[in-house]
Amino acid sequence: MPPSSSPCPPLRSAAAVDAEIRALLEATGGWLWGPTRARYEELRDEWVAAVRDEMTTAA
Image 1 (cartoon, rainbow, N blue to C red):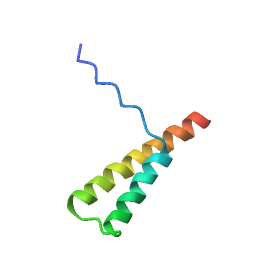
Image 2: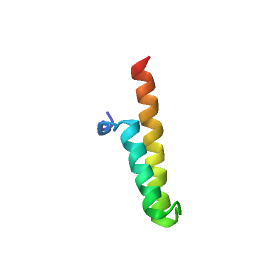
Image 3: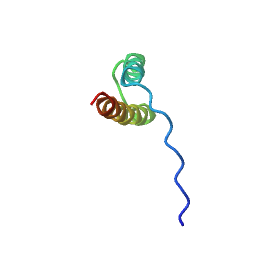
Image 4: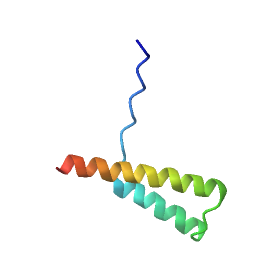
């Protein structure tokens, strides 16, 4: 039997992730390069997952 995958960490709310995205954009003046761009993309993916989870929970 293959090893079980580690449990997913609890999702933060979409609002919490959105706040972090906004803070990142404000701190960089809207310029996303290199590691900053990579962090933005991670946050964007986390935000999408959080929105989906909230929509599923609400339904």
